[in-house]
Length: 178
Image (tube, rainbow, N blue to C red):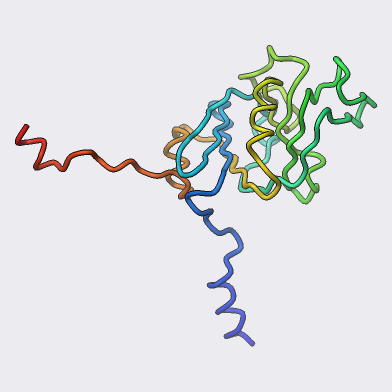
């Protein structure tokens, strides 16, 4: 029995690295930046707002499992699409802390001036027009990596294995001859 468990744990890791071509979202809480990586390249980088305190926005790898247009805000009974709805125009929920994509998410905002700041109760806020763009690019199942780091988005993406390192056009020996 132990041998079977050992074999399966090697063949089926709990937190596998994504394939380098898979779409992937990276959020760096330290810089309040969100990157969308596709086909091994950083396609877009957006400014975001994250938690008022570092522990409010969870860290780690999560999976997008809920997408909603004009999301309803249960906490204060705000209808989706209402100008005073703090969730803005889109909701991209992920599975942090076993919340089924209903508590933590990437969403728009009715307060665009909050972008770039530490103001949320744990979610990741984006400008409505930018979350609308991201909403079109991601599907359920796309992975989201969140951390607080002084490293660049590109360095994080390389460490996660989702960024291609461009090949040099010339070999070093060729450059010496130029």
